[in-house]
Image 1 (cartoon, helix red, strand yellow):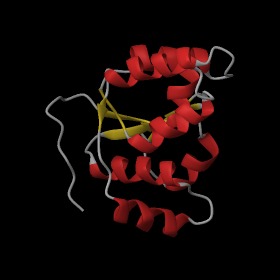
Image 2: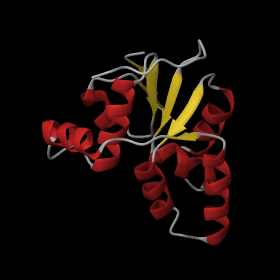
Image 3: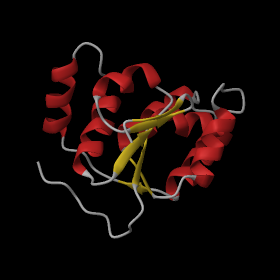
Length: 140
């Protein structure tokens, strides 16, 4: 599989659904962490459609939250992920991995110097890709 080089010497930060939702939902336990991470972590921020859909669902489609989500993801690159590679990854980890997690893992493996920004410490600690969560940074 081909790795995509990033023009910047900074890392590629792959934003999973959890931080997208937490940054907007002030009642989320990870809200402060997500806001701080999205403001201070240096790098090129990318996300993907499955993360946006999962975050929107978690925000329960409230109009103000949807507007905030739109503004948040507008500052990121929304990158495509091939469905075949996502299903291959999900099948490797079944039944633990869902579609959005598989997208994040595929992207982490496809970009040099990339890590996943997630609130899902338990699952991502098993996937063997670099990630950072509210519980700390791992495999970076």
